[in-house]
Length: 438
Ligand SMILES: [Zn+2]
Figure 1 (cartoon, protein in one colour):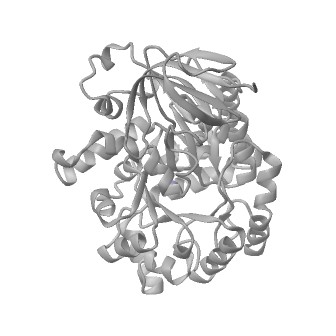
Figure 2 (figure 1 turned 60 degrees about the vertical axis):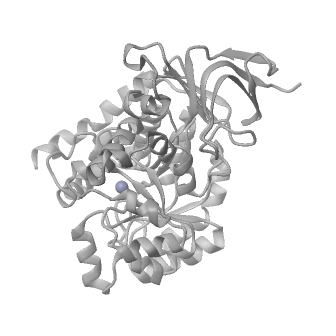
Figure 3 (figure 1 turned 180 degrees about the vertical axis):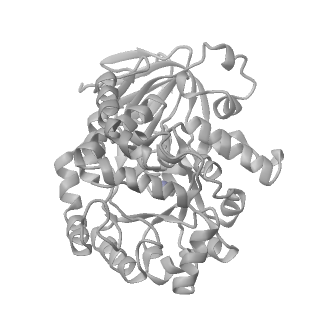
């Protein structure tokens, strides 16, 4: 028998499958990175056995919009809206974000992500080959991709260099290895990428079989800017440029008109809802209930740590739920639906729900364990209400990605977190001078 790990004695197994089953006293077997069997405690055999008594096992959380390397700029741009934020952040990025720093910041972000129970991230950032190397070293399922701006930008790439880099992306991914990820292309937004350039990206995406991720309608000012330039909303620009012909997920999508929502649903598009960042920057409150009702796929995201300050998907779930209470009513909040936004619906929003997002046989073994023996998790009347409104990242004890245990007893298994934190603190010291100029 090849290596077959059994996680046994699971108190609560939250499957997030199509029937949303919660199994008591169960066991999971994993082999070659995949879930191969789910059964009653004590009935599943394997070559190694781990007990999960007193634990909840759930699918790993899926963060559908972030910029992991921006952990290095946590707290750098406070008290500003998106415009003020971009000014401050772009200056700091210009000062330090070379390839090695992007890799280091992503390692820090990836460690923070896995320790909090996040197993998959959609991460848009400069030097994606470097960020991907860092995240893979930590053990995260890290969806990176080539980024596109009309102008050379902080990575100094001309447009033709960007296209050439994107063509080489599948080969680079294969060289780096790590957990499987889909191919993504990531033009930054419709205010930094012209419709002509977006058309080239959509053609390239078709050639590479890639999906697309970009920022859309984060603020009203952005909508007005794009409308003024092209007499179209950002979503209309996407449709015009052929982007929506590929699987597309919008970062933020706060200010979508009824017709934008209809168009997005028609193309089976998705929104990465980032309530923490949207509220902190005063960007607005996305009405995700309306998006979901219209058939838009919605996942949850934290955004980067320079705007939302952490990568905590538990807080993100809570904010998403509270926003629905405020926008609609508490009766519209169903905790299990909120938990699904952070797991299986996030996977759907990324176009990879056949691979991750639920604990089911045949899927990648990406799941997490939560310690129930805590005062704030006692008693249990409603397991999903517990997960959404009471569990926090400090309750996550163990994390598996691709069948590999990347967190054990709340510590990363593949990297030295203290070493990464030391390097990060050292690297940002050079920002002190710049800080004085603001
Ligand atoms: Zn963003």
